[in-house]
Image 1: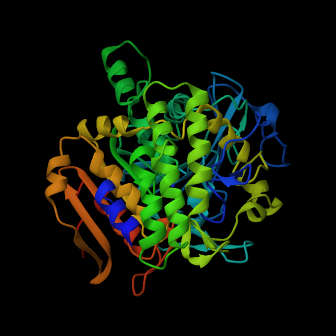
Image 2 (image 1 turned 90 degrees about the horizontal axis):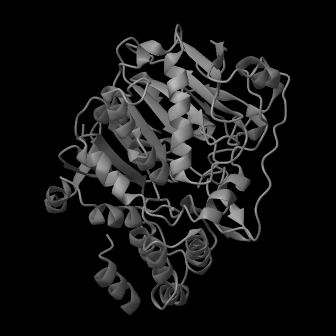
Image 3 (image 1 turned 30 degrees about the vertical axis):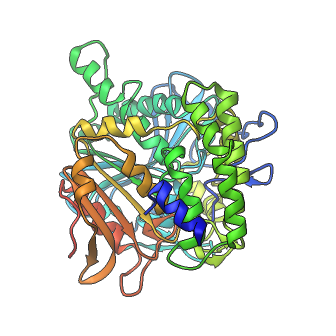
Length: 493
């Protein structure tokens, strides 16, 4: 118990599903490969498109395939945006809002990994349908986020999910460039140009704690690029960024890694390992190990320094602290079969022949994870980008499930406490309040200015996939989403 007291005092502690958004390398979740990975090979499907149909700077679109969204008169479209910068084709699947699509906001959804398909979010979490436990069929999701918004799912970088082409992206900053280019192509298409003026939100999870802030703030993507367009130095479509939402994200390793130590001992469900294991991990953190290597990376370390830091931290801390339990939902043994896998359903001829998909890679591309690991992107903090976005007036919400270990709420809340934004002082003064859904307790929340945080009870890594006691599956997540996209702070109902 002494160690636990020390951890709490030092760190003030208050990073994935059945798809492995952090695949295993060299025997450890999120480990670093011993050599450069091979690219994921393009495998042509007998679908609506062929690879020869690629036209740089244009979209290839299948409209109203009838797959997934079966609500009457709700528009959907799927296909590819063929980038002009390289031989890359980015997969998208768009669903119009079920209610008021002509005025509803537009959001993009990105899963993490890196290299995890956003089809995970579509079919396991927040999309118009959910996959059944037998992984062969889907059923309509009454709490899809397209109840209140137009939703665009994107597989990125190239080589992720149904996207394919040259796999030369290995940092979050490089990924931002391709996502911006894809959106410029998408908004230029006559079928989708009407959405350019809508309020726009970036929503993401897991490694999205890196992707989301970077896409919004870095390298001119998106905030600075908008300014360049308005000044006339860049041609393009201004993206009306209003919201950034991140679920169970990994953003800043230095502040979040101690959360693994505390969560392993005192999460809301059961200890994950015994005290001696945590003590050993604490030594690996504090005595010339993980912590010092993260700091060395942060102080201008090159790719090899940051990659080595990831390797040490994953092997000596994260990998040793979850025991026999599933890292994405700790109440169950590893592996938890829920949510079910997607590969069989998505690669079936019954689906691919209708939606126009071309790539048969798995729902998570382990090679992509390894590429990013070799640059140390995982260890490089994106906290400053987060601060830039919040200070620019973008409404920001961070949320997590309290049953997730891999990007646990203790580390996430510790990261929030390190943020230096216009609202950080106000946030620190706030007490947590009960988050209720139709009178049922669903979690805890705080608001400060345009910044909000929500901890959801009973949810694993994919928050919208879970239910909690009398709170229906996905209800807390949809209520949060609706409030934030309506430019409102969180509140119980």
